[in-house]
Every structure is written in C-alpha cells, then in structure tokens.
Image (cartoon, rainbow, N blue to C red):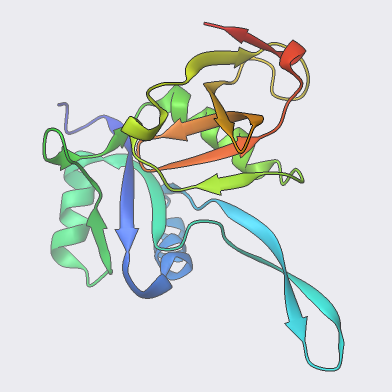
Length: 173
C-alpha cells in the first residue's frame, strides 16, 4: 500500500469523544466524517427539543495518508484505534466511491433513515443495486429486506445507512 496516498480509514473513538477527535482533524486540515442524525430529546416541563448527535457512537472516518495517521497515533494522546478487518487483521480502508456514496445518503437527513452497525457478512445475501432516479441517482448500495420492507442500504465495512425507496428507482448492477 502506498503510504503517500490518502485513504478513508474507519477509526474507533473511546468514550463518545468523536466530536473532539473530529475537531482535532479539522484543525490540522484532515478531511473527516461523522454520520450525524437529528433526534428529539425530552425537556423538563416543555416540549421536546431537537439535537444533532452522532448516529453511530465512537466512530469517525478520516481521509489521510497512512504514514501521517501512524504519526498522529504515535505522537498524540487522541483516543483512537483502527477498526480492523477480521479476515486479514488489517485496518479497514473504505474506497473513495463507497465513502462518497455513504456520505451522500448520511448527510441527506431524510426521514426514515435507519442506522445499522454491521459487518459485510450480514449484507452478503443482498443484491447490489444503483439508484437510477431522484436526488441520489448514481449511488450504489445493497438491497436489504428487513421486517418485510425493502430497504436500500449504502454500506461500508463498519456501518450502513438505509432508506426506503420505490423499486422503480433501483436497478440491479
């Protein structure tokens, strides 16, 4: 693997400090992504308030050169560790196209998004599909049936996001 090329790494962050870690990477001009979601929180004596929070706790993605990430891990006290691929015992690296598709769906904030922590084996039986119409035209993912409903899933090795779409918007690839 080329240590000078940037790759998307999936990193585990301890004690729900993913926003602090993202701030660190932002400060040193390293592209990073945390999937976020809007939730309603109870408020004492009044109506619920909305908050934007990480959709999958303790998870951040960074687009960085291998050697630079090693240096950061070695010389800082950041609470991060690689998420390892169990098959080959190497850090999980997500290809650019898959990461951009995952970010596009994740940032949409559409109602009905369902966050799924997964492993690739859980999605192996689904068909690979591409969205052919609408706001996400060109995004590729997996068709997954959950609870009798068809769900379009954009997955990367450590997480997935799902949304219901009309079947006419999908084609098998």
